[in-house]
Image (cartoon, rainbow, N blue to C red; front, side, top):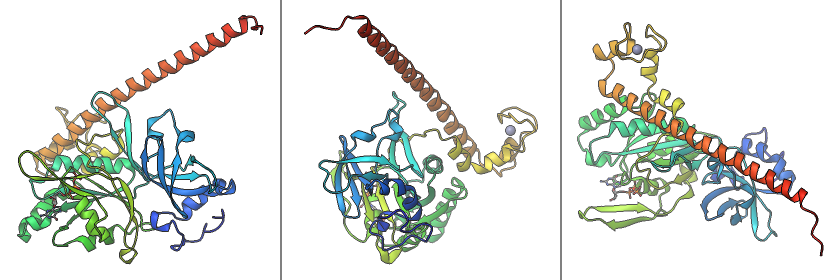
Length: 380
Ligand SMILES: Nc1nc2c(ncn2[C@@H]2O[C@H](COP(=O)(O)OP(=O)(O)OP(=O)(O)O)[C@@H](O)[C@H]2O)c(=O)[nH]1
Ligand SMILES: [Zn+2]
């Protein structure tokens, strides 16, 4: 791979890594690493200090020792582009990570506020919400906020559309969902009947190399089944796990990079485990986009710091009153905002604790060096 192979020309689809999302811009960013003789590759899987990296010469195992950061957000994750040692080095090492274009992050647990990066460099976020149950609009809003925050373009997919055979009913459900996702395309898809699968595949081919797609949504939403429909194969591990109430449950056990058929426009699929109880992470920006109509109304409130409570001249409350803004929508916005504030507070607390630890470490090191200087050299 030479540094000037494809930039600024359009990316070559014949590049061995093009099916994995490599394009002219990555090529340009990689130039200094190429000059050092390193190989580009995309991280498919990470486990215990090692990762699987897809390179032009096939998938290699590489140690991540040199790229272990202080900041958990910078830990190697699926979807990252990496610079790895060329052949001949044993073991191979990841020498650098290319700056991410986008990243999906969620808070890991209620107690700790560290973020966990679920997938990097995703272009299309397919938000799967099943029609097998009442559409959970709060869930839709949460997913949309998360997607905008990541930098990926959200696409709302109502899965299992075959369960709503009545076209008018399906239309209403899609309308309701669209109301919770302004500016987001909504598609009804059935992996079972194949309805909407082609339209979805077509929507995912944006971007120079077809783009990287991630399927997000609650467990059982049909993500793995949809992945299979898009891939046209049974690559995903759709494993039946019988649960207590007898309903079949399927659990995704792999997280991988899967090239989509070139005949459908290509691109690559990142299938992540179900995002149960998905949290928001620094979603200020994404939240604003997810509730764009409320933000637009708020800009017309009389007071710049209007809390849309009891203030006179509140455009948001006026819209609720005249029915242009649903009450549920406003309540949902407030709930997610409150969550966000709590998360931010936890993050601040964590960062402060880390800073204290770092200062202590420095002090301890300083004392240690000081003591060594004072001690007379040991005689042999
Ligand atoms: N009727 C119908 N059922 C579907 C469809 N797609 C998936 N299912 C069923 O829904 C269940 C869950 O599907 P999965 O694809 O495993 O769901 P998932 O989102 O990958 O679940 P996790 O791996 O737990 O995150 C399975 O029993 C599927 O057979 C569909 O289009 N129509
Ligand atoms: Zn207001």
